[in-house]
Length: 196
Image (cartoon, rainbow, N blue to C red):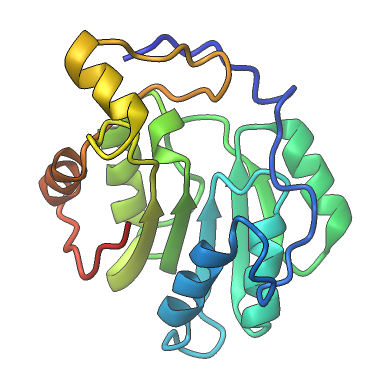
């Protein structure tokens, strides 16, 4: 594991609004999968975008399901300040600790896109997510497959034990698909589907 020294205030993400139908946008595949997952959520369900940056994905989810009660959290005050300027229909908050400021069984769904690899303690983070999810709620997780042998980075890790510096992306953890599945199962998550 790398030491956390990435500056999230300097490198805040998700400023530009995303059209959920724009096939050219890099987030399209995530939004397509999220739209499938949230279509069955009850009317006025609560959804948390964990690690929302400046809220572009959160706002796109709102376009897909305007009825949802959306929350976005991020550790970057800069990003949250920007997100709050963009809309008043979403509750954006800064995370100040490993403990989420929500009661048990609060959310019908949690979305976490390209974030788990950034947190210092993934097990503690997953336990907190499990705590705030209602029973049988949905959790959408996307992480890079950087340790997979189908990537150049995965080959470098496997053959040379070479881990890239987190200076550029802030990644503290690298998993294979199997390692990630084990981590999720150890934290009592049931895996419904997997995509690559």
